Structure formats: C-alpha cells, structure tokens
Image (cartoon, rainbow, N blue to C red; front, side):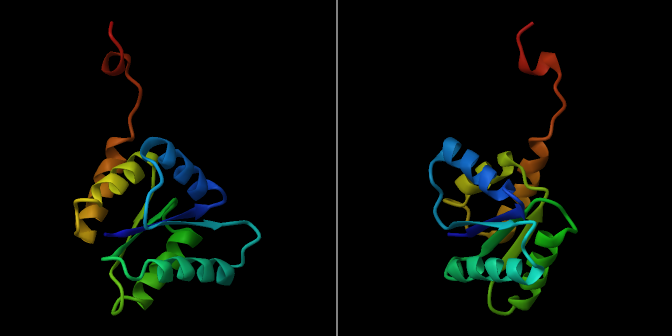
Length: 139
C-alpha cells in the first residue's frame, strides 16, 4: 500500500487529518508533518525525513503539501530528489480535504503511485466549486 505524508504550514496537516478521521476513520500508513513558525528549515527537514523513514517499506510514498513553492513543498521536493534511487516518492500540492479523502480510500485498491498522484489532482480540482443554487438545492 502507498503511504501518505500530509504536510503544510501550522495546524493545516493536523486539521485535515482530523477531518479525514471523521469521514473515513483512522487511516493506516499515514503521517502528518507540520511546519511551524518556530521550526528552522533543518528541523522541519528532519521531521519530514522521519516520516519518510517510517513509510519506507510502503510500495511508494505520496507527499501532499499545502502551497506550491513554499518550505514544505521545497523540502519535500529536495527529499524526493535525494531518495530517488531508493524510494518511489510523488509530491502533490494544493491539497484539500476532498482529495485526501479520495486518495486515502483509493489506495486500498490502486497500487500505482503515479496513478494515485494523478487522481489526487483530479479529485482536488473536482472539489473546487463556486456555489450555484440550482446545482445543490431543489428549486
């Protein structure tokens, strides 16, 4: 099974994880790594490395970050390159609850890390909508 690391700024990963538990129960092979204001980038990198190490026996690791180009994304990208000959790691950014929920459920039957990463993006986009009354309510 593919392992998942959910990371981002402050309580964002823990908040998504908490919401995921309400929707789907406690996920397995799932780690949260917060980048806090008091963290030096080296401290954050060590935390992310520890999460990767905990999941290194998985068939692959999907790292889901909050914002493209910021520290969690940058450090995850550097670690993907560092471990590229040893571990299969994909990174998806712009994470929302809909995509986390879909990927958590799908990884029970989908074994391709690349397909899961693609699915995460597709599901994330599906969950971004502007409210239009006729789409969500009876008239």
